[in-house]
Length: 592
Image (cartoon, rainbow, N blue to C red; front, side, top):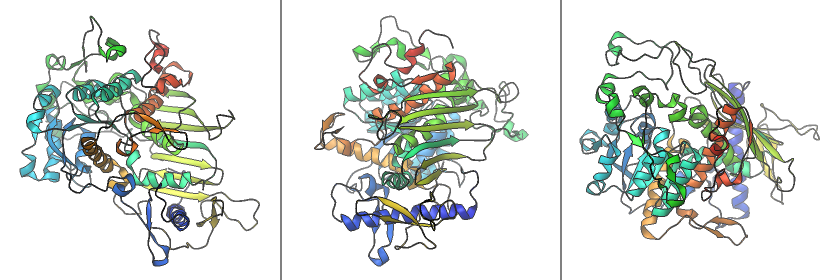
C-alpha cells in the first residue's frame, strides 16, 4: 500500500519486521525465561538463538483441544462469506451438520465451491462428496431450528446480510445455541445492544467475525507496536481501494443462467451480481414478503427486547435485487464503512489498545456508479478522519492520534492495509499478507541511517526500551519469515485468522460446557477492571465488536449529515438504553 516502495525495499521492510520480532522475543525470554503471565509468540531455539513463530492455537491459548469432540454447527448464509468460512474451517473443531440459505444458487455453490486458488473450497472438497451428502439443507432459519435437537446442533455460524444479523442471532440464542456472527455486528447500535443482552440472558456465547483478532500476522505486528519500537504513534493511515470501473461482459451461454427481467452488471463489481433464474423462480415477491423481522424500534429495551404493543414486522428485502445485491443498499448493508472500513478501523483500534474514539468527520460521494453503471444506494467513495486518545490523553487533551480511512471504487493502486507512523519508525500492514518495518533516521547520530533502504537489528536497554539500529547484515540468529514472501500463496489460514476464529469459538463452547461462565468484570491485583472469564471468552465478543460497529456506523452518520460527531461513552455501554444512548438517536426523526 506504500506509494513508493520498490520490491527491494519491501524485502528489506519484511526482513526488518521479522528481525525486530525475533530480537524482541529473544530479549524477553533471556530476561524472563519463566514468566507465567505472558504468552510467548515465538519459540527461541538453542541454535544461534533462532526463532520460530508459535501456532495460533498456542498463542491464543486453545492448544489443549485433544480429547474434545468437534462442535456440531449449522452454517446460516451460504454466499461469499459463508463460502470463505467453509473453505477455512477445521472439521476437527467444528463439524458442519446443516446449511441454510433461501437462495438456491447459494445452496448449490456452498457444496460445489470454486476452483483453486479460490479459498472457497466447498463442502464437497472439505468433507468429501459422500459425507457432504449427509449435511442437512434448509431454506429458512425456522425450519433449521425446528430440527436442531435431531441434528445435535450446538452452535451456528451466521454469514447472512447485515440487516439480518440481530433478528437471526436472537432467534438462534433463543433456541439455546451459541452464535458466531459475521461482521459488521449489526445495522444499528441498538441492534448490537439487543444481541448482547440476549446472549447474557441466555448465558450463551456471542462471537463476532472480525478475523484480525485471530490473525497471527496482526498478533506479531501488535507485539512490535506494544514494545514501543516505532515510538509515539500520532497517525495511522488506513485504506481499502478497489477499481470496479472495468467493463463486464458475459457470453451467451453464461447469460442463459440469468433472469432477463433484471439488468446485468455493466462493469466488474462483486457487489452487483446478476439475478439468476433459479433464485427469481423460487423467490417471487410474495415469497420474499414472507421473510420478515421486527425492526429494533419496535422492541422494548427495558423488557428483554420484547415487541412493543402494536408492533409490526417488515420484510427484510423490498425485492429480489435487494436480496442478491444487499451490499449496495444502505438499508441492508451499511455501505463501504460497514463492509470494508470496519476491517481497517478494527485493526487501528487493536493497535491503539482498543481505546474508545473521540470524534469522527467524513465525506462520501456517489460520483461513479449510476444509470448504466451498476447503480447503488450507498456511497462509492468515502474519506473519514477519526481522533483517538493517545496514552496521556486523560491529563493532556492534546495527545491525540489521528486515524484516516479512505475507500474508493475506481482505483486499486494501493489496495488495502494500514500504515502506522511513529516517532521512531513506520510499520505497514499490507493486504493481510505482509508487514514492512522501517526506522526513522536519528539526526543526532552522524552515522545513523534510516528510511526504506536501511536494514535493522533491535537492541533493548537495561530499562527495557527497544531501539532499532542500522545494520548492513541481519544478526542475532535472524527471524523466521512472518510475512508472505514473493510467490507465496495468497491465502494463509494462520495469517488470515478465519480458521483460528472458528477453532477458538469451538474451544470456548467446550470450556463453557465444563464450568459456569458469564460476561462479567472483576478488579485485578493492579486495580484495573478486566473480564472475569477472559480466558474462555471469544477475543471479539459482543461488547468488543459493538465498538467496531460504532466506529463504522457513526462515520456513516457523519458522512450523511456533513458533521463532526463526538463519541458519547454511553454508546459503548450495552446497558444504556435511554434516548440519546445510540448514535442513530442524534438524527431520529430528522431528515438528511
